[in-house]
Length: 431
Image (cartoon, rainbow, N blue to C red):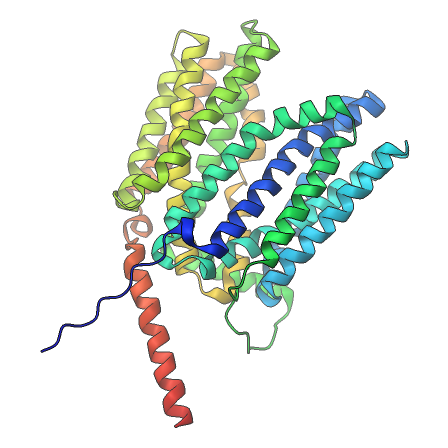
């Protein structure tokens, strides 16, 4: 009996032309966004001198993302994904270029800045789920975890380099960071144009009402045990990390650490995240994702608990840097599996709904942290967020949804088998 032909190994990601184009384009885009995010605040302060109005710009951007999140996912699922991404980048190029021109001509106002920031956030809300869904078609299923880890590395690098770059460019000229951001979106647009892969399956069904479409996505998210578990984990982990970072700033300020020192501590923690994102692609193929998630949740719990009682200021920062080292591996594992198990026609809705729920506790974390610090001190505030992480660890440890995760290679084999059956059915129907 002849040996069965072995399936070909997938192309390594660094040789995957379309993934490389998307990754490089987004690297420029995220770097530009990181630079302009700081520049928005500096610009409003320079024009008005008002921290309240500077905060208003950020609040408008956050509100836009919150309000448009669910409908954006539903719209992305019925539109052409590549067209959506190209349109979003084109809108952002024009918006940021218009702001740069307004600054150069002395016509920039807080009202105009609010409009531009809102437009940019709206485009980002649509771009995000389209990018997530497109990855499924650019990268083989078994490589989704590693691809997600490489995207994490890109994001952490942008977070590290973006704000210093924005401050440096702003010192050269107020319009420069926004012009640079417009150029970064243009580079991303050109990179997306070069993508050859079709980024979605053919759509034949009629479109239902947006409200019905959103509800279908939420129902799928809740009914799938793994995705339901990630709702709890995402909300707790994001809330805890947000609170811990806020408490760190407050505690360092109370201990008389200068602003430069506080910034250095935050940068050190982000370096931890960047290092973790470099480790994640190595860990993904070697450790089962459920084991990785559970181990990292308990590790983060222990490290934050230790930080609650650590005597030295920078010892605390070092412990938190170790916590953040673990974050990219969790994100990559959860994200890659989510993309793999979600039907193509629901990718946008599931991604946007999951992101919205995962951020539900984050806005309250600084308030809770501030109240606990004021009443009982920074150590107890850290302990509160360590308890949140402990709850997440217990959920991960006991969740059937997490432990039911299968290797991405198995999911890839199932998808290939399904495609083979569909091809056979098409041949039989036309024969």
